[in-house]
Image (cartoon, rainbow over the protein chains, first blue to last red):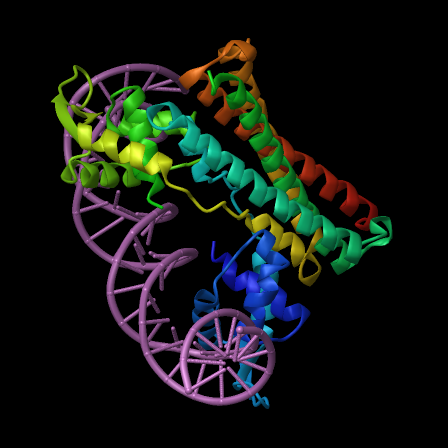
Amino acid sequence: MVALEHALLVSLSEREGSGYELARRFDKSIGFFWAATHQQIYRVLKRMEEAGWVTHTDVAQDGRPDKKVYRVAAPGSDELARWLAEPVEPTMLRDELGVKLRGASLGDVTAVRREVARHRDEHAARLAAYQAIERRDFPKPSKLAGRELHQYLVLRGGVRAEQSFTDWCDEVLEALREEGPR
Amino acid sequence: MVALEHALLVSLSEREGSGYELARRFDKSIGFFWAATHQQIYRVLKRMEEAGWVTHTDVAQDGRPDKKVYRVAAPGSDELARWLAEPVEPTMLRDELGVKLRGASLGDVTAVRREVARHRDEHAARLAAYQAIERRDFPKPSKLAGRELHQYLVLRGGVRAEQSFTDWCDEVLEALREEGPR
DNA sequence: AGGTGCAGTGCAACTGGTTGCATAGGTACG
DNA sequence: CGTACCTATGCAACCAGTTGCACTGCACCT
């Protein structure tokens, strides 16, 4: 596995950056598929530097704390290429909401329904955010190639996932509306 | 969080069972939303018994090893009801395939495309399996209510997730087919 | 003057999940 | 007759991810 290392290598290959910057970037790109907190990123960057995959230079800033800007070293690029060619196991869905719904009749069904509605709104909001990025950054998707195309396709994955989750929540709410207030 | 405990409580509330049986059941129901290995299940069952959420009785079998059949105790039901009413954070997507696609141009694009195709087939196979269960166990979904309805809706979530993942893979393959063999 | 929030890095403790291994009797296949 | 797989349980070690906290200094609002 060890995907966070490789996600960081991808991000740093595109553009060098500090741990903090990487955490921000993750929020709005690879983060659609692989979220990470800053704590984790700092720890992993350190480990990666020990392994020789990245190097850092201290950069002083005025009005802000110093930062450590990381860039990918040759062994890091090699490792990334190696990992990209290696197969990974397809993931299973993993969402507590499904567990709650499955057990709904063993507790307060109304509370579970409320929870589904809340998740619906959250996923719908993410969907809207992703679609806004899509319109803004990729107005002509048929013209894309290479790295940009790949970025676009990852975004499309995020859009599709949020769309289908939202639709599922709607289906659940519809079905529970009928049986619920009886 | 602690969702596995609660997933087990849900499953044991429906029907008592041993750790092994629970692991099997997970493969084909709650497992759509929360997978677990037998190791983890044994460990968690032990912990749950210490907490008084479940109790077990040893059952001798002929031709097979003895098993420990677990059932939910009153504190376990209480805990489950409490947890069901409690909010959870909506999950983020978490799939390495997105990371690989995002970094595809930094390595062997053909290998990544092959990997997407492999995942497509795997997800399509799961989709077919879920749909088979849907047709077999829920031929008249509009007639459902209560526990059965909830089970059906969870299954629908699995179907939708696999469907949308498969569709996304197809979109990716289509886009990469055009730029790839150039 | 005081509170909030952002940029920036980091440690320590904990929880959750995976992997490898051990044990043991039964069945099914070549 | 050996091998491999299924039922059944479990330990130990490890890896990944989360949470809570600590420190600095600037900017902005009230």
